[in-house]
Length: 169
Image 1 (cartoon, rainbow, N blue to C red):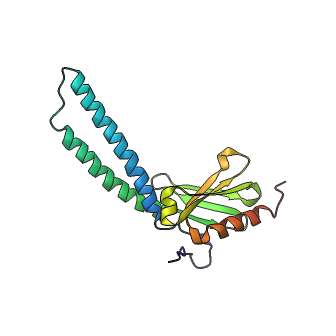
Image 2: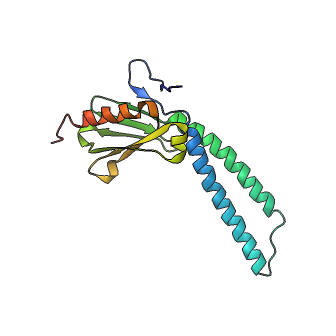
Image 3: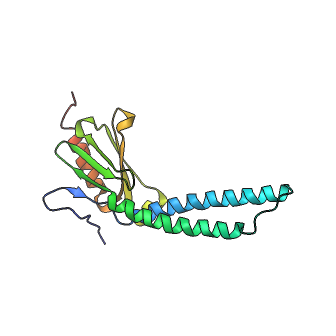
């Protein structure tokens, strides 16, 4: 099935592939589980090497943290997806994202020097890629995650074509 992101009438605004929520969720939950495991393991090591004893609620606290992580990260993945949009204007690429801290940025085409397409294992499995936009200044680099495999080459070509139409001086 080919994914076509919704485009608002009269604009070129685009949304990310919906499966990007899965990639984000898995990455966040794995990092949360590693941190919870390290904290729990550290508490157990301290308990076995000292005269102190662990509170009897420690296992339940770890279970509660895992449940909170799953619920919180699920909500956040959906909220982040709803907040993410991008569009190609006549002057450049506009990016809008952020759940708590909203961010809007634009990269003019004439500043664009390199367009990279990348895929992690989850993105490859789910049929998506990320596009990295690079300029001479490191602070103006931008990334568009969750672009469908069926359209990532078109996006890259469009960006490179528009980047080459002006010398930027």
